[in-house]
Image (tube, rainbow, N blue to C red; front, top):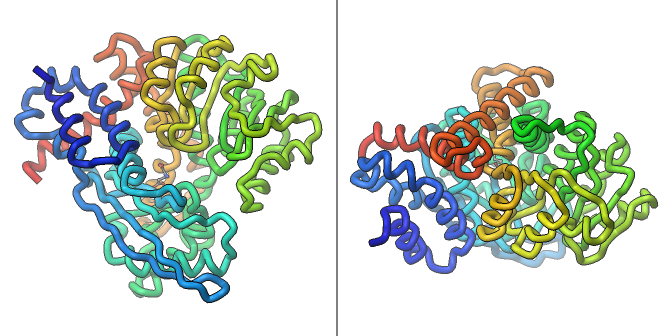
Length: 456
Ligand code: 2IT
């Protein structure tokens, strides 16, 4: 006889055919929740998990825009409003050619637990488009964002749903989206989008918040196992905002970052991406719009570019022993073969930075063979936590100082780590069961709120 959790997973897969990333996260999260279901039989009676895996609302819309040559393009737009039990829907917008419901729903589902873990009052949602921003002119980006918001505006609001950025959506796109929202609504509604520019309600520190939070989380994870992040050798993937914030905080804390990566391959810098100039160069690379990291090795000749490869095999390629791996690029970046390379190199710590960067089988292998594995929905929650600080700043008609934001964020990351470690210990017998602990700690608050609010 299948258990309650197993039945809900199977049913969810059947009802959402082909949405493989969404299946993956539902399977990973719900499996962790099994001991909580045993302790709370009332959840099954209330069909709590069936409700959790079904978005409260999903909006799909047409986005029509014109390129610089007068050609008309049609893209798909999405917003999945997943769960509002503990606050307004909150989560980013992703613009990337591979966007389809399976990706937006995996992100929206993860966001429920992540947002709950922050301890702040925000529900889960996610949106985006299959629009590819790479190679587009600034005018094209603006026209696309305006067309996108011309539909989205009717579904969002500071107490309803608060979008932000994700892959392909940064401060520039948020600016254009916000401008169009304000034009249509004739309301400033500062807190309707987060990640805004500083002159119009943006929060100091938001750009680096995700990366800083990841390193603060990893620091706690190491500390709990008697290790100091200072002096550690670290390898990350990606070279976007998250990677940049991660690199910057690693530099501040005295860790040596030896890799970054892009779709073209990875960079190994034996001297460390550890100077102000090198860290700042990551922003330049991203801003080039070419989506390649190879130019780093031209600018800094001590570094080597490994074309077509991922940094997970840096030990096999260079002999460099890594103490901590942090995937910061995108979903399903680390497969079983990579997990084996990571373990073979003798590494004991792994902390996810990007959303769901590890396949389920690779994640299970790493958890079994490493000292501790930090899950994305906990480790990268600093970004959305800072977004919520921005919402508070906007609704309070005030401005928070940089150091204020950092102090709040650092404490939030310590609290998140402790919540994961404590739930891991309570239900799985170890403070290092952070993956299961994050799912449980994130779930508990949402479950209590849903139970209290009746059958909705
Ligand atoms: O994955 C994420 O948490 C984000 N892209 C940020 C979401 C937010 O609302 O700041």
